[in-house]
Image 1 (tube, rainbow, N blue to C red):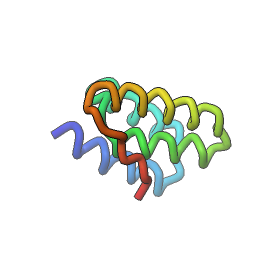
Image 2 (tube, helix red, strand yellow):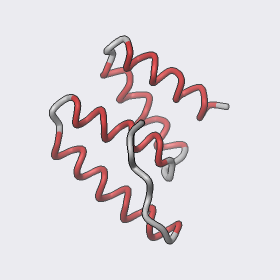
Image 3 (cartoon, helix red, strand yellow):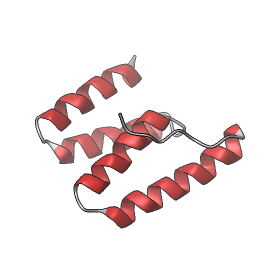
Image 4 (tube, rainbow, N blue to C red):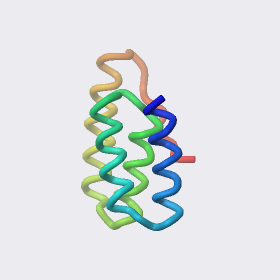
Length: 80
């Protein structure tokens, strides 16, 4: 329930351009579900959108490494 609600709230925050709240929510989401590709891709998109390219790249690399080790496949980190 929290997962779906957090995605809906993140979309509202993004549409309201409340990027700080979006980041806080997505980071909390990632603590609850550290293998959620959708949450990670939204956070990477947010970092890129706010000019934090290094942070986006770092998150992508760390998430991919952790995801591949646990799931045995590459994550789908396409933002939609």
